[in-house]
Image (cartoon, rainbow, N blue to C red; front, side, top):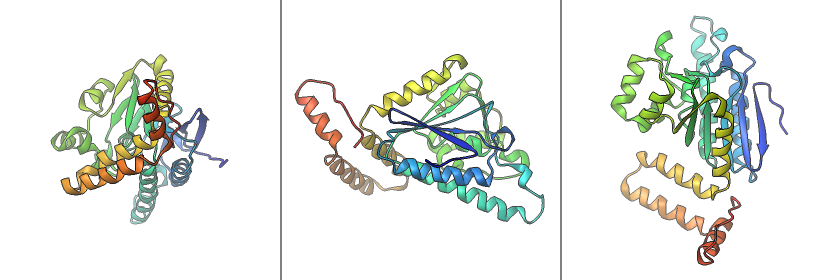
Length: 262
């Protein structure tokens, strides 16, 4: 098992919970943390025992953005930001490739790239103490972390532009109404509800879940013909899984399927 300094991974009945706990203040993203996210995403994506991934946090911050203490305010910052963004983006790509559903859980502040990291999970559960904020304009920067990719897909282009240009804090209820979050729960119920959502997904046909969610996201980049071809390949491949066999047997036996995620 890999030991991490800026995050932890707990496994429970097929659910892998990645908890962000940066050594920098306010859960700021450092290069070391970004590298650990790449490692965690790759490892979990390749682990056949992982049937659902949860991305959450310790403390009052899901993520406050990049570690500004590592910046110098001169020409050297461009190279550092390029490297930091590149590693964070590799982590997001690896999470996106995982053949398992991903649930985000936020009950604190998510700003800058912390905000961006709330956008790629398949589902997002917010506690009542959550606050989301794009935040990049506050220091004269553009978005990264997939914000400009996922945000318009979640809320629509014009609303995405409004959120970016106004850059106002987004409350949990507003996030749910906009389509940024699926659920808002009281703070004292947050941990239990997040675990419950993950357990429900982990009990399902997780390979089929993963393929279907990727098809949905990738549909924005394809023509109808290419999307239909991708659907054909996906559903044909699914017939070679044990979950398909179990599902079919349960269907004809008038029983509930017992999926195993493979």
